Image (cartoon, rainbow, N blue to C red):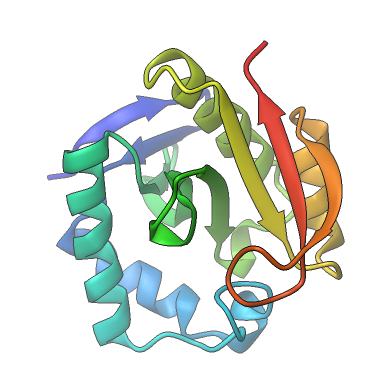
Length: 172
């Protein structure tokens, strides 16, 4: 049984659990989906997805944040993940992120998750600042981040051993 942390009009954001592994494995094993995810865009094995789901549940329990499992309410389908984590799972900055299976691209889900996750971070967790990173070529993600209120700060090599575009959002 999934534990819903919060919801939007169309989505539930839930604590990651074993029930999510099959759906997430099908997404994260696809090279096109993973092109802009992770350090090298490598696909994830089922075992890696299990480890990340378990780590996500731990982070939610310990910190009140994680990349939650995103469930589309109408169909009760797992469509991806999104939320907040200490950047690179190390911090101290808190990163907002999202990732969806290809079938869910272009439907506004990333914007919905980003907006709701930022509000949750500022209101429920009392954060003052969030960061986000994007590969320079990931125009769709960059558009989502600026649309929800992140400021693009330019290229940065601070995180993940890559030159990425760094974004920042401060509590208003």
